[in-house]
Length: 623
Ligand SMILES: O=P(O)(O)OC[C@H]1O[C@](O)(CO)[C@@H](O)[C@@H]1O
Image (cartoon, rainbow, N blue to C red; front, side, top):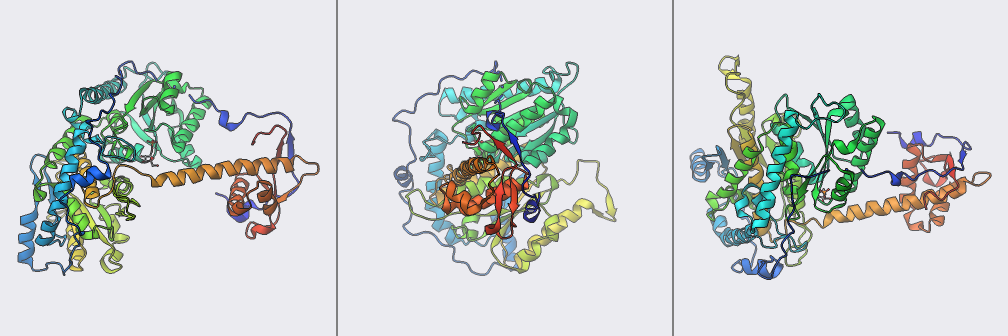
């Protein structure tokens, strides 16, 4: 990217005049899907028997909550090895069928604290039961919250939803089989097969598929996946360039629940342009995953895209991995999606017990509450000791922070809740920031993710007598856990046997439920995200201001001689003197991209700048 000083080097007065009207970039055609295999029965209306988890109902559900917030009364952590071993054994959770363990012994909660929290947990369990039965658990948006039904359709609150879930899963499996087997072929190569998936989506419409691809895609998947998850033109260009001629054998999956997210729309338009330039018909390779009748859905339908799959209004973006959003990309990579669903379903079952110590999601929520004092006072560092789980922390960042990070609680009190999540992987991070974790500011607790199986059977070898490469990884994890604990740094350890579709499904389900329970414990709505709207709205205002700036500059640049303007003059003519800083940034950005020229002055002293456009458009293109 050009530096700010670099962009000021253009010299006045080079300009050209264009007297022909040019089509506005915004008029670029939106493109196409056909979904012969899926039918969408009309959604039944909510009736007055539907339970709405409004603040008052939530309060009713949690009527027996004690008045005061339980607060962790922290003492020094247990250090006696015998007592610690007893604590480890007493609290160790095991899910036999999943081969999953949860060790909470290195979080220092006391028995009294657990007792004090009991009424809150029981209220959280009741709220979760209501949610699973189809209550309006997201009162602000008037939505049910049904991601648990995706892996156990029989739990869906009515036959219509059950059918929707089952039909979609069938359609995803059938489409993926047909693509992988070559029954559905790339249009420009009737003999060939699709080789790549390009997934276009952002947030919950990208993070789950990215995590699962990294964790589970085989070394040689039937289709290799790439992602466009931003409106960064260079990033988009990179993905398209990497595909090169294989764009012709690429299925483009455009994922957006709302169907109107600007970054995703931009990604789509950029990819369509690449298709046009390559002489390819996008519609024949485009697939949409979105809510019925969204802008994206309508576009795909009208243009006759290759396929469309539904996203349900009762599934939130950040809990959509087990919907078509996560299942279709995974299936195209040869990942066993039914196993993923089975793992999630088994974990959900385990999380339905109302006995806290037998409920792994509740145990996690308990640890979060204790460690962060129920107010997010400590960050959650996620450290999987397995390269393939690298993106788990990034996935959890949205799941946890978009769910828990809320200004108001369910009763309308300003609480500014949150739980910060970050991390990459061990042992790599031991050579980065673990130094600070052990000795620096004590503002975190750690979640270690341990995978017992180092390599597929038959591939291991001892790189020194009695020790394998995986033993080192194991040693690093255990060593770091001990070293942190010795310094009173608390940790949770989740252990799985292997990274499989089943264990990944289980881990996703574990954290989804832990987030839901924790949200109840701290009395917030986990299922909306009002905060992200502010940034989107502000971005829209910046782009609107940019159009006004362009119109003003265009008018001045069409004069003879050209009239370069100061920032103050631009701001005044835009009737936006209070936005002068933003106007400066807009101009600097345009200049860096050769769309505005600096006639005089230096960007280092914004008041000295005089700016004009290198081209003049007689039609009022920017109005
Ligand atoms: O799937 P969509 O509607 O494009 O939204 C993408 C993401 O944007 C958000 O709404 C936040 O801006 C997330 O909650 C969501 O996962």
